[in-house]
Length: 178
View 1: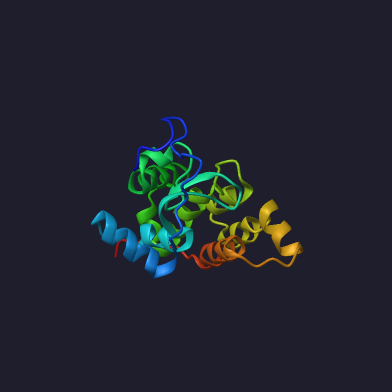
View 2 (view 1 turned 90 degrees about the horizontal axis):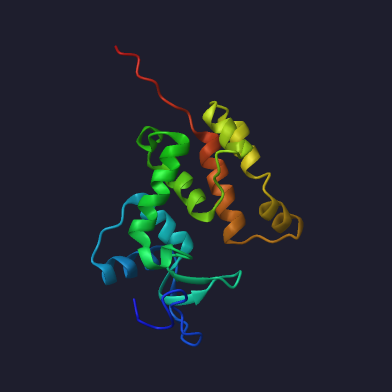
């Protein structure tokens, strides 16, 4: 990262990146610049968060860097931040590998967005096996409900709807030992 600003606020207050990439272009640009191959869940987050090679202010005016890193994660970087978010998913939902890549990707992106807390009703429903109820409850979300009531369809509404669909379609497979 550049050495602008201070250790507490690294942004110099002037320089904002102008190049924002979304979708597969964001993944390609990130992998090219950092010489890494992102995993499927990392690609999912990069596609929907987008990638900016520098500092920017998000839609709420929060200083952000790279793949949506804010606060302490600006200094940690995307991969380290992703690993911490994945660990949080595993703390709340258990081993995500048993859920498959699609569902684990959605759960991680929900943590990344701040939509997962052990106290959330949708999380409780999910953890008791009520996947359809969890999917419906996820959309009982203040920000989502407000946007929908205003008729706004954006990356937030789409992101929550995709996660809800994937959660609602989840059907665990059990090993019978045969």
